[in-house]
Image (cartoon, rainbow, N blue to C red; front, side):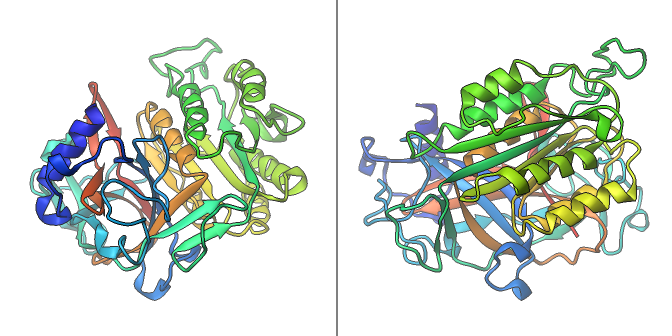
Length: 437
């Protein structure tokens, strides 16, 4: 009922935008829109219809009251006919408020300033109150930020990863011919996670993830995979742990692919190694990617997810280049990088993500592991893309966090997503969208 109340409240707020009909006209037996699930900003090289007029792609799903995804060719309560992108779901039905690009500093935090001269070229030096964002619990400092208008410059495009799906293909409906999903994890398991790096004894006061939200996130990921139109989704899973020094610190949790969630639970979650050593992220990423290349089911779509709490320890250019070279053999494979910052962000993470068609997440609260992994899981089976143009001129060689609000309107109904730094249950969680230039 909370979802229904939220929908009706949003409908009232967005009357001029969405053209909501009266409450009495809603049919609660029919499928309603419930929640917008963002994946994030994707490189424009990953399918933008007109790269010259596009700065990034926004990828998202919409969940309905039937625990399913919004899908073309289906009838919804808010529509008078079946959903057809380009007909009754268009560019003007996905709307972004004017936004702010916060510059990310080398410590992974928002870059602060005392004057515009402290910021990259063209940025303003403002407080959150001056940007109209004080309600989102930003700190009282002044930040380097760029004001931007956000234009949707393409019809929403739907991509679905199932063979023989009864859905006609078109420019707006891309029916990928895959039987299932290959999902490979790279899991940083270094001693900084539990604070044992000083003497081998866990210390929650110094731990980057003292309450093991990384494990909660993996469970949320599996729960997200269960929201599917298929009663028996085909999956194969792997997990490489990175803790130690170089290749001696790489642990493959399973010599073969795990093809059931019960195998994942027994092999990974029940046998999760104790954190130790350093973070050989590039070596673990290469080992995971080679497993995809050499033994993954060729008829499955491929996804790679890396989770780390800091920069690689003792990495060499050779280790980085080895992974980069291997990644070029998997063009447009979504690569999602979750970076829990602990005082320094690694620019090469952004460079690697830009090669793949995935997303980069930078956050300083480990609870975000559980928030974002669910969203990624829901978007692994299907998603919507819209191409975006930003009015802001952003200097290259920086990473930015975009604060904005998105509203997606389908017929007489609408759902929204706030890409803001917000407080939930006394914890600050950063939902802003990450973009690197």
